[in-house]
Image (cartoon, rainbow, N blue to C red; front, side):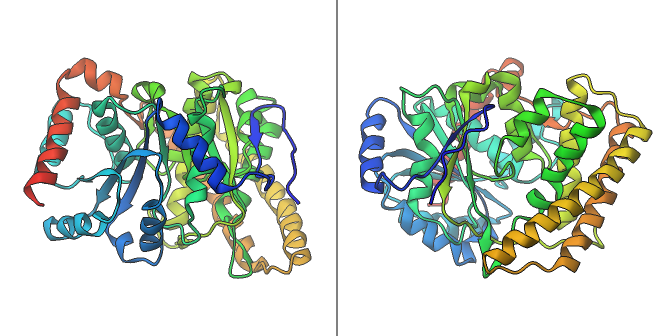
Length: 406
């Protein structure tokens, strides 16, 4: 039975199983007459070969309320770009595949580099940032949704529930964050959220004291979900992190730019599963090892920007406090899984906690050693101020690639 609990910080919109998908779709079609909606899909070329992408494509082909779909394609050569265009041609909506590695796009990136404004890293953050720039240049959408391309349990109801809170003009929400249960193959998943973010936020509150920002993040049931929707009016001033802290970074931007009543979380699926990253204990630049460090850095940067003072002693205390909090939560997760007939490998979970404990110190040391770091990609407002014709050039480049390689 669905609950209707509200945490008092941000609105939680539940799935009470009383509204059918057909009814919600009809409402969205009505909203779309005055508020055009777009979907951004950040995609690696390799994801086209997964079981998830054909299912996502089939589900999206039935969606009637989207004005356009923007697919940001990473790590593709010319032949792979041609294949991707063929792959997505079944979409019935106006859509474009942006080839981020094309000569035209790389030339634009070089132009930004000469001005000191280019993204510092390749990856999902840059992909999303580029797609947002293209959408801003289109000047025809009031609402944008983003979701990952590796969701093996995808249905178009996920998109409908995600986009509804910001598409409904009677609602005050500018940003909607999706949440769901991470359960798959009789296992409790979501290791980074369960074993790093949740206990780290508890530990931060104990070590640095009460912070509204910490309470805000703790209000989200799944802060690391890659599914969110926004009204496009906030996009030009949105700072996109260049590393793997994208999801925390977007929530932090919503905190910085908006009142809490303009942010909500929405239940978008009963169950959600996607590809699972390796822990990559031996490689600090891969898998959950890299991801956990980047998330910690994103949290530390935001708290420092709000006035929190970090020292080596603070990070040592935080490490010890986190470790105890994480082990306590692991007991709760284990009992929850056991009662629901699910499995948890306690040894593997404790190994992950030990790795995350070390990465808290690694991220803290990096933070202290790099006081001049600028981890965000410049906002599109800044790009426009420095190069007023750049957005139009980006739109032309994507359109030219689409036409030339058709």
